[in-house]
Length: 205
Image (cartoon, rainbow, N blue to C red; front, side):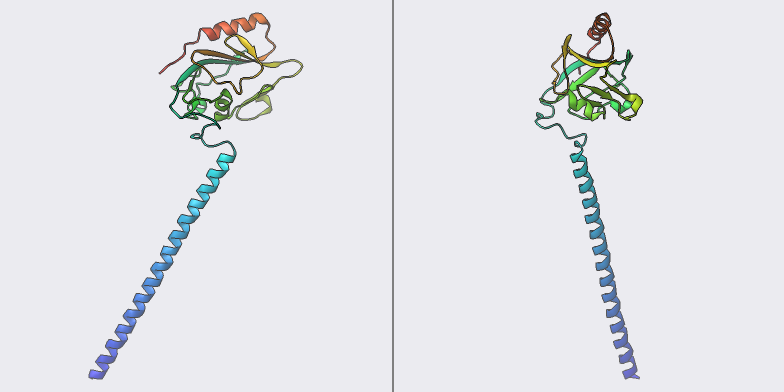
């Protein structure tokens, strides 16, 4: 009877040891799976962040050569009219898309620049508007929202009443006035838009 009891104890001990080994193996497999999942998530996020940088950076990335964020705070007024219609930068989709240069406080007339060497081209890029010296294209890229210089209509730029060939590389200074026109306006109409722009209140804060 003593031998049977000892035999049972030995079997119970062996069974306990087997259960412990099985539990440890199970825990190791779970830990490996968790680590693999974390590594996969990090790799996935890293890849998409890299991909975003290749397409122009995320909203926290400034343009090449930009100064320290917060190093400057300049303001300028802007007016964009396409066939006479005013483009509304006060809409949510155009507000504060980059900390370096943006529109804010539901105001679509004042540009805020918060670092040195940040050109207007970066502002338009941040709100997904395609702009060069020939075309102004809305974010949806639809043909009816694509406005390019042709035989009938032209895209024109003015900075402080001076006509300029492009504003892409222009870095605004305090109290600048920037006018973008697409259409076939005569000089009287241009002067009226310049006067309207001069009357815009520049929001400084």
